[in-house]
Length: 392
Length: 98
Image (cartoon, rainbow over all chains, first blue to last red; front, side, top):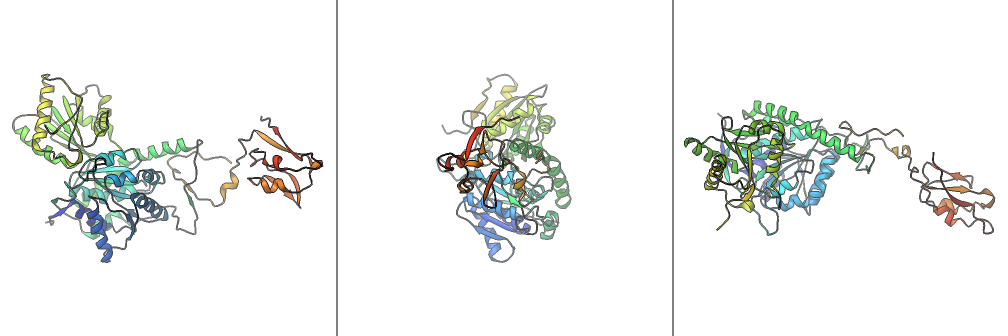
């Protein structure tokens, strides 16, 4: 029997990094990621890994150093949160444009102002157009598993793109949960030996990185990047199938929960999906036909598959833990886009919850379930977008 | 140089052939071209010195002409040319393109 242990999300990811043993890791501390990199730095100090840990002066520098190390020919990882990711913004596009297969846990945190260190998805959502692959994780187990799969997806010869592994700050990063680790040799065998590609440090084959591409080919370059992104689906599928063989855990592009016969549904990312699943069980006991869809692969986004999973519903509530002020929130926009071409479309509502770490409680789930029932029964007017769990 | 159109197979901003910039001609956006009037030239080589590119061709200390693959037509050579007895050895004229 496999050993189940209680660890925090940050401990799980630090352990994954120890098992992966990257060549270079350049990082800057930011809550709630700090605790994870601090644990990893102990592994470095204790000689448990061969990683060159670069302590830089900012996240912009951290990502720059990672890009340099990746172009140099190393297997590279870093991690950040909230404003740290925001400060990396310029270099995120350089990492993806230069095809650097960097893996970066993003421990989701709110953006300032006002200053707030707690869970919120605004950080990673702000980077959704940066050309990075994004994997989202409900708990420590999923974050750990995504982290190990991320290296295989990122480093695949057809892909070679950076990957963010998103995990909720504090709610998962600092809370104990039960999970199981894979054995070190199993992880090492799964991730394989890293093969550099056109490495700057390969002095026998000199290369120049970063030349200008202007109006003649920039447009073609971006088209190529988009095409490469669309190949991620097949690669992520194959990697997940292989991962199932070593772990017994199956990962699709998204998870569905009691969705097949449902009439109403919730779409939600990360840790809050757990609370929703409990409340769905409760609602099901009362005869309410409700299900849930939780995206895992957010970039690239599996539009057709999500449409097929959701189009039979009457009403869907998309719950977003970030906002686009004066517009619909990011997850809602993707779900609406998925469903637009369907002949039969569910009624869609967008509810904003949990910004800056505001607790997402069972009664908030009941609230949206009741609202969807009333909309399905045409008892109330549809309000397209609204914040829930506001203080009165 | 025939440019390879970027697709997913070469979508990487990496130059793998050292010194391949010689293959890239950069004079295509010139609108004025320099004309050398040898009778006014003292071979002082100020044009060669001032050219921001390397487009003034000099052989055995004598100005022979211009490398039109790289000359952008900026006219600095013509401006700096002291000429002979007040008559410039380089003047710029509008380039007629096919």
